[in-house]
Amino acid sequence: MRTHRKGRGFTLIELLVVLGIIALLLTVALPRFFPSIDSAKETILADNLRNTRQVVDQYRSDTGRYPESLEQLVEARYLREIPLDPVTEARDTWILEAPHEGEQGGFANLRSGAPGNDRRGRPYLEW
View (cartoon, rainbow, N blue to C red):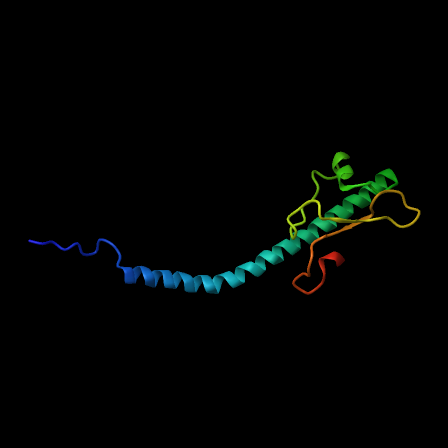
């Protein structure tokens, strides 16, 4: 008297079919997922640049001179922390531009130090 254990698991063929379906779904979904990550990073970068530039202008309005460094803005509590460059994923890659001649301070503008171009082909250095 043998009893068969029917329906108590999956056969190898059934598992391979399921894995094949999952792989097919991933090939459709992943190419749409990665551009959205790049888009989000670029949006965050633009927001960080805009906000930090506003803070630099506020500092100049309050003190009559530009800040010497980003750390000075944090120490004076204009910023909670140095903003993150989402493209380079670092806080020390910002490029600080000196103020115009006759202006006092260390920097009047900042740009991303990220290499390469955005999704539209514009270099990050020009942001």
